[in-house]
Image (tube, rainbow, N blue to C red; front, side):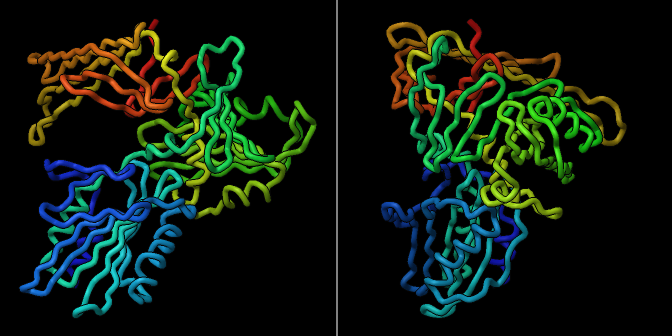
Length: 447
């Protein structure tokens, strides 16, 4: 069964098939052709095949998501015990992969063997991220199905959970002169997010978290990570406190470096001594945010978010990291009025591998606009310019139609390129304005 173990190690999450995909929660995948499908409500979706002549079989289970236990190691262990060990009496995994990270998810897989109509194999791959864990179980008694399992797993695409939005319970808060209908969001786990002038405040009990808006002085690049963190503390934290003690600044380098500062400190506004942590995960695309945690004491912080450990992996900071994603607010139909735009541009410079001389440049630029008007009408257009410099090609499409809101987190558009579309929508806040997210793409208002 060595091929199975090798496969689990090398599987990635890039779709390779053009067959019709299906969506299960925030997982999309291409199911095996002609396999029998079964859906068990609130548990799993499965695909199975049996070859009676050869007496071989294979089953694939896409499990309903569960709440994360804190990281990929904890999630995999929990899922293995529940889905594999208890079901089939497997006490050990044959081999575990090293955790891999893809699009905000961590991936870990393992293999175990049991007896059922001959020697059989149970394989588990768990994806952990955004406070969720998703597992896929493969059961087979033949290596004949390894290519099918591999093709299935390589078709899986993990997305940012729509449930982070769908499971919220927004409430309308009187906002004075605020022109948006929703200024707070109540999350199912008890946290309440409120939009404020310089940050989004997320509170639960005596703990609060400030998701700081982008700040040029605090976010200024510094080649020395600790120096950048100290500067951010001076800009974002220090002006609101006094009398710091037990102060500590730490940084964990790597592809996506972690910044962590903490102190026992007195609030200027209340005179209370609190424990403050300033945290940032530096994503490779530059989208990291400074998040400030304010708790009554260090013990309260560690009980809620975990203790800092010097050699802790990125997954160990996941609870802190996930708080930055709570900058989300519902959308009312009246909030959409006006024109919203999103643009992108980029270029790739080619160099001849043999001569080192310039081999040309490819460019890409696009602009997409939505204009929502009275009577629930809208106009949409997309313009794209791409290709090598000197031979750039231009394309454009546009549509008009009617829109409706499905609750406050989804918009239905009657016509986008000839088809009706439904997109997830929400607002995030930055200082002075809101960004409208349509199908996970940011749009800024231009009028």
